[in-house]
Amino acid sequence: MTTSPPRPRMKTKSVQRSSPPTDSHGPAAVVAVKRLFAAETGNYFLLLGTTLFLVVFGLIMVLSSSAVESFKASGDFFNGFVRQVVFATVGVPLMLIAARMRASFWKRWSGIFLLVALGLQFLTVATPLGSERGGNRNWITIGTFSGQPSEFVKLSLVIWLGYILFKKRDVMDNWRELVVPLVPIGGAAVGLVLLGGDLGTSIILTAIVMGAIFFAGVKLRFLAVPIVLIGIAGAIAASARSSRQDRIQAFLSGCKSADDHLGSCWQTVHGWWALASGGLFGSGLGNSKAKWSWLPEADNDFIFAIIGDELGLLGAILVLALFVVLAIAFVRIIRASTDPFARVTVSAVMVWIVGQAFVNIAVVLGILPVLGVPLPLISAGGSALVTSLIGIGIVLSFARRAPDVTTATGSRLK
Picture 1 (tube, rainbow, N blue to C red):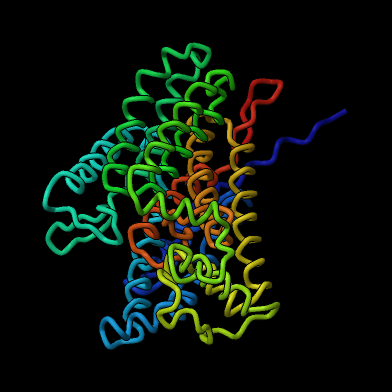
Picture 2: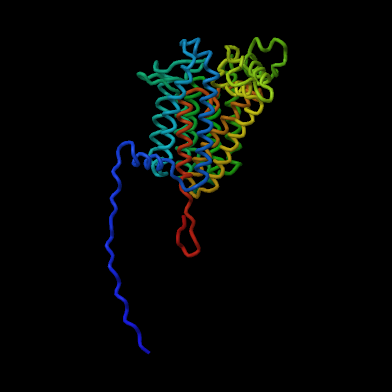
């Protein structure tokens, strides 16, 4: 039996293909844009798509709800809308940039971010740099910059909570280990905002802290005493100002008498009238009568009433459905993540965005007293929009890649 000699292998030369020349507007720019949106999970695109839809929807509603007041203030119907477009133009790229960052970046800078945010909030309430609007001292002006540091406190707090609770993940059964960092820092964040008179934002900050602790896995019995203390502190804060007492009394009365719309129930009752006038299909985009100086904060805190007026019950249900989808996206990202830092941070952002949305809607419906919190991603307001988008960008950074899975042989799959 004979065997044929082995055939000689043919040597092939590797040919390097040179990439086609590109200019500043060519394929290189296209590739850079694609990388911003590149992801491996469906959760990423679910959250990104819902967020962008809410932003565009919000711009349309801000244009409609702010036109009259913008004309009264500046002689230009589009002034408020243009400002919101500018903020969205800044916020969306920042969201996409945040989505590219790794968890190590947020861990490294979480303390610095929170320190800067608390410093700005302190300057707002304790120095002439702060200014009062609507009865609350929550705006700061430095040069040409004007914004609400309390919104940046929300953003930095969710990152810091994620990092601290990540470091404390092995001592969750020891309440003493949790009290030392959480109570003084969380109390300072809430207290500084409360000193400015912003009770609504203080409630949202408190909810963020409690939500992060809950989702971190702290035993429920450890939360009983803080909840009682927070309730007592909330009652004291609510009675500290006569304006708050009037709003709470109006809420407790139900705003049912014929003259309620002339007093403390003015905003609530006119919000109800706007919702009722919309019916099933609405009065038509741009046709609301309530925005003609009848409904205060029509483009901000009570924009949901204008949505119900112009787009009807169907439009209001659409907004509710979008925030439900947003909550589902957050939950799916939490369940898919294996990193405790990511899980706690995403949970805190979910409590912030979704929780504040339903608080805002509950205020418009009269389920809660008037608190003065905007509808995330929809209401007019630059600081709130930009920080909300960056917060969602942080969540997108965790949702970008599928989690690693360890197989039985010890190898790792993606």
